Image (tube, rainbow, N blue to C red; front, side, top):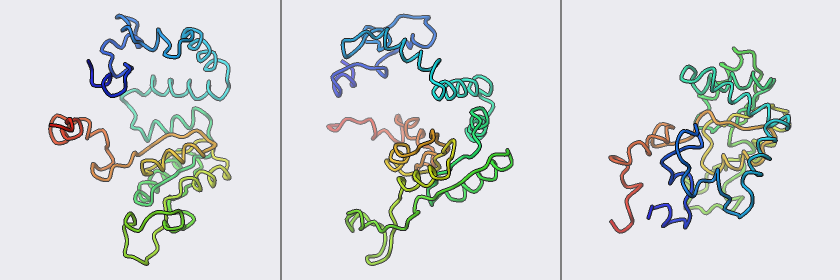
Length: 227
């Protein structure tokens, strides 16, 4: 029995080793989400409805086609920063919003220069906007990394999103927002959201490195609790 079955009680895509949904050149596993519905409905109908959405919904169609075109045209050629610029142009975005962490404000400034050079307008909002003290939303003192009595502002992703909404941005880019804060920003953003930098303070903002080293340096991440 797989680890996933033990932990979740159900097999899903990470338990698959054929990936037949990609090229239809192998066999689907018995639990494949392409062939069965876990809710007991008709998965074929659901797939057809979603496919129709890609074809017929103007917003979904524009985003999906642009993403596929960028992948197909620049696969292995463009960095993520370049892909975001190309994507913004492909969806005809006029103004790009930037929701940045204060710790990566210099990286955000560099990205603004790139956007400007590429003829794109931008508007940036840093996470500490609003200057709301952490204690004001009930964060306990033991979680505030500063001398007692000093002001420490919360990260404010909801206000970041609302201010970018007011600016009428066409695409918003996340630069290093904290885990969870990025989720709130995405929830409240009116424009579609993509990420340029995923914050990882330990690994130089390369979170995938922890996954690549689970056989060595980060073995602890997959070690069973009783080992």
